[in-house]
Length: 295
Image (cartoon, rainbow, N blue to C red):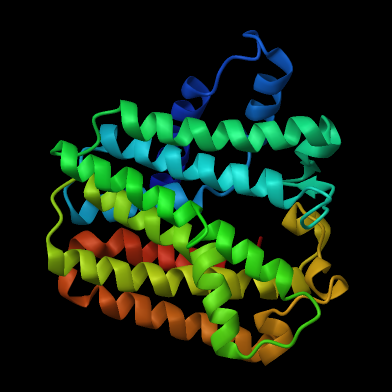
């Protein structure tokens, strides 16, 4: 097995190449929209969701040529969500990945259209590439991503987040919000990667539990970093959760207990992989990567 850092670089490079290829050229009309789409997606981010897709593919012995397109589709949905979340009507942020947000660099109308177009492109890729062993599985993959992005997933979680500003949430309510807002797309990343290969029901159940735990852990770490890291380190404005009076794991539990919870979720996630053996090693490594990240 190759070194984990080398594996990360290989996966990130592969998905970056697919994204660069599938995003319309800025030379094609409408040029400004296409330029903004490429600005929003390329050359930044940890690509955690693609990494999860590639890692889960090891479990199912999936062809990386297939997985790279599923990984790119998930990353496009994630990128679209960031563009819209940063806008004044949502989180109103001026910095993302160390550079001006799309609505600042271009304008608000363009940013809205960028998000719309990136979402459409994600489903274009899922529908146009041969990803699964049969048509029924590929159709279920399209449905999985649609549900993860919609009102019962990421968009619904964002709606709950906006409605919760200034309100005290208990731990169950906070988890419900983030299972949707952050966790749904992370779960889709894992399952889409595995569905590119041969996936048994038992393995799917184990991966689903792993993904739900990692999705929550990712958000817990995000909340800690927002409270403790600098803007320069994060590449986005630090301290915005507290400034906007948002309920977070840190505001509810405190930073020390939040970090403990993240480690507990990692342990729970890895325990779900116990029966999967050596092919699950990348997923264990990505779990460590998610928990130990500093930006």
